[in-house]
Amino acid sequence: MSQTTAAAPRTVTSVTADQPRIQQHRRYLMCRPEHFTVSYTINPWMVPANPTDTAVALSQWQTLHDAYRALGHEVQLIDPIEGLPDMVYTANGGFVIDGVAYGPSFRYAERMPEAAAFMDWFSGNRFEVVAPREVNEGEGDFLLVGNTILAGTGFRSTGDSHREVGEIFGREVVSLRLVDPRFYHLDTAISVLDPVEGPGGVERANIAYLPHAFDEQSQAVLAERYPDAIRVDDADGAVFGLNSASDGLNVFISPRAKGFEAQLRERGYNPVLIDLSELLLGGGGIKCCTLELRR
Image (cartoon, rainbow, N blue to C red; front, side, top):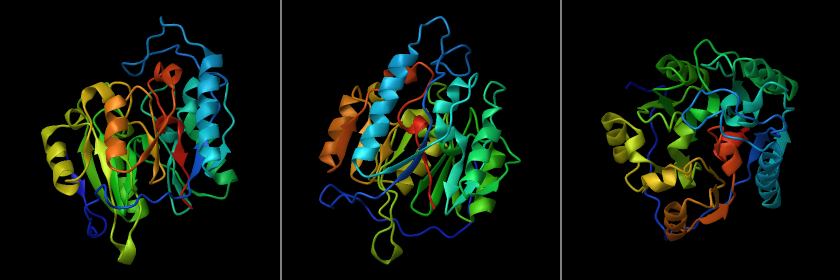
């Protein structure tokens, strides 16, 4: 595991239950799963022999979309493309900070055609697009926590993409190695709960994570940097409980992640339960279907 520092890290304060949770406005990119199916295997969740129901996937996705809108968040859509069933997992389509979109470069051939579609969408919607040189799968493996980028490697994005993302955005990058193939993207093992700055530029960073999804060195880094983080158990991780989205107050999670739900309530968050069990058949959940557009 490598750790690259592109900017001096800021002070991170403890975040406890007695501090008020602050809802932040979000802008998201989503894609209707009109062509959703599982016809190939590129992660342990995908079993083509198991039947999928596109109508159910669409209904569950719509519930998530409508929940975002109901809470005041903006949702923009990219058109689905026939033959690219994984486009619904828009988090892998790029990583966006301050109107700059770092494009994806997918590891598997089945998803490679998505890259051009996402970068065309960014360009057509007035984002500055940076084409990748290294293999990376966007916000699936890059998570912004305050002023720091947590970057995953081990299964999809390469370590060289961590250097590249740091150069593009000029931010501290902390590399974390995933070791459990079920949690092949960083956003399946870490949930960013409070990615906002407090008074005086002091970060109110708060995360939840699944310890055993990482190697020992990465676990040590997370424990040192985020001592007050919520540590989630395997039962909740196995239903993609950590593959969630948060606006700082409302945390959109799987209804099957009962332990994580209780932990969030204890910390003063409002869990919003959204069932995406059909899309989990493709190895994706709430965060996989949600790409944050930071302008």
